[in-house]
Amino acid sequence: MSNKISVILFLCLIIWKENIVEADSKALISIEGRLSGNKKFEALDGFHGTWLEAMLECKANNMELYSIDSKDDNAAVFTYLRTRFGNTTAGFWTSGYYSSSKQWVWMTTGKEVVYTNWEDDQPDNVDDENKEVIEATYKYDKGLLWNDRAMSEKLGVLCEEIKCKNNDTDTKN
Image (cartoon, rainbow, N blue to C red; front, side, top):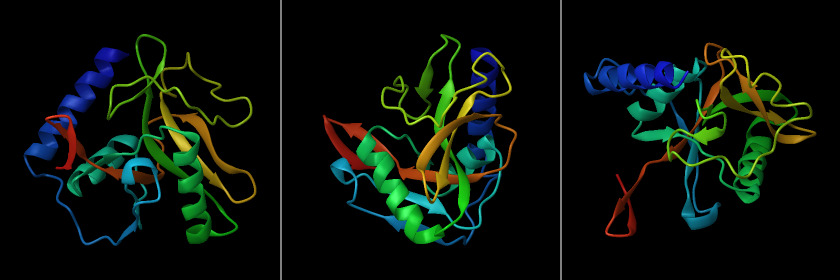
């Protein structure tokens, strides 16, 4: 499974580098300074695609799939989505995936997923190679809950600003 994800990610990066996927004029919905370290996230309005398409869409907007690092991150995203979507349910891709070492990892950082907010009885398909990525499901009355999903399903996307380490200082890319 790790080889499959590596090949897929490599191919996606080649496509991105070749500018096959271009940024379009989709409206970006943004919230800044609400998360620890002024972490910025954006839900791309109008996007509905697979996990790989979501990754490419974030890259086309000079961002990356979102990694939910803490309870505060999860709560801030939920609060924002609640004001945006109201009394509905909506699913969003994150950068979380199930690695070949049998643990959940944030693709964008390579770090193991420590904080979790799985929905009841989730993840339920960790041994099913078709359900290998993390969806954050916005539920108005329950919160932002996580579920394992097949990367071929079509969902919305949460992206975050790309941060680069430069002499131990975070800077925008």
